Amino acid sequence: MKFADLGLSDELLRAVTESGYDEPTPIQAGVIPSVLMMRDIIGIAQTGTGKTASFVLPMIDILAHGRTRALMPRSLILAPTRELAAQVAENFEKYGKYHKLSMALLIGGVQMGDQVKALEKGVDVLIATPGRLMDLFERGKILLTGCNLLVIDEADRMLDMGFIPDIENICTKLPANRQTLLFSATMPAPIKRLADKFLSNPKTIEVARPASRNENIEQFLVKTSERGKKDALRDLIEVEDISTAIVFCNRKTTVRELAKSLQRFGYKAGEIQGDMDQSSRTAELDRFKKGIINILVASDVAARGLDVKGVSHVFNFDAPWHPDDYVHRIGRTGRAGAQGRAFTLVTPSDDEAIDSIQKLTGYTIPVHGGGAPKAQAAKPEAEAEEREPRRAGGRSERGGRGRGAAARPASEPKPAAEARPEAPKPAPQKKAPVRKPAPAARQNDDGPDDGWNGPMPGFLSVGFDS
Ligand code: AMP
Image 1: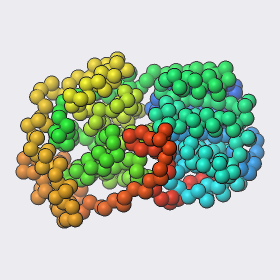
Image 2: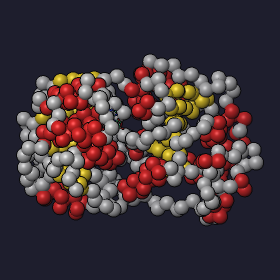
Image 3: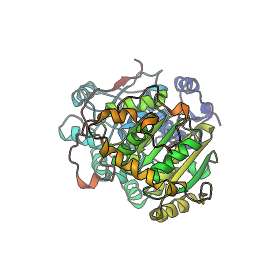
Image 4: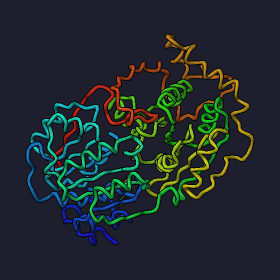
């Protein structure tokens, strides 16, 4: 099937061709014609399947006709995280370049004043995280009565983050006869209930999970102990010929500590987690995309939907608690036909988590090397390394030297040449995160990632034709 068979306008087809795509992915082939026929849709698809374009493309054609009105967006896309919202916005820019539509991105961590100004002018597309949207709504800065098209993206992630009550609330503010598109990687009961309540005669389109069939990703378990994890990870980084890697941790504190630890050992490592303000996250992602750093330590929420090309490796420093997160994490590698390798460090307490992952994917992950866990032997080193942050307190030169041989334990293998920074520099001091208390329902272990923490730097509102 070709894009031209889907009923999209010539301008849109031109933008798609210029983006380098010839054929629609299965979710696009299934969703696009039905959206153009104004059907409600349940799309069961993961990131990596091309699902974003499956709603962005038909939306652009639907919105091409009609006028904007002050304070009344014509369509609304709800995304669970700022990163995902920003990626949806990027898709609108890419495919909407031959259309004159206006868009506003309503996410936490950016100036509310500018967002309000954009809304006052009127927008065709509003892309928002639920928390910020509800806040502006409650302040009377936005009217949803003119919003005839609603997209709920990554609904299962919204559920994990405690956003479902917000979403239900938002749904009741929109016209009852609107068109609604709901995307989710899985359909747990609360999402099914949401769909039953707010969608009308939806067409369900399901595509296979990329991870359960992506043979481009080689998966391994690496047995270790809790204390041996850092050593085990560095061993893997040494042995594997990594170009770029994402290292996932379950907790924000682990993300912070591990990134600093890797930096001390000479690696070009950075971090992305939910306590960082938006500008730091964007800057860090940029550094990763440009190759200034090649190891990104990340939490699930912050990394949700990240689409970075050429990630050769994914390391699960912690086995994820939710099996879906495993699928999502390893899907950061092996994209677009490339080969990828995914390693999960496991301790005896992870047995249950690994069991659920294997049940979900229907795949028994082989144990890497099959031999004795290396990290056990390296235990004293791991302990020395664990103590380092306290010893280094207030002695920045220690952190600086940590990148070179001086701070590396004698038995520590040297990092790969390309993973070593040019010159040792002290690790930058991070500001204590500014957190706004959030309702308990929104808490997960990574903290609420609805955009409420951190300062508010820039604003992003994009006219497609600008
Ligand atoms: P998504 O599932 O929306 O996160 O998209 C995953 C990746 O697939 C992104 O890098 C898109 O640019 C890419 N993509 C979207 N549509 C197509 C297509 N028709 N052919 C190949 N790649 C695509």
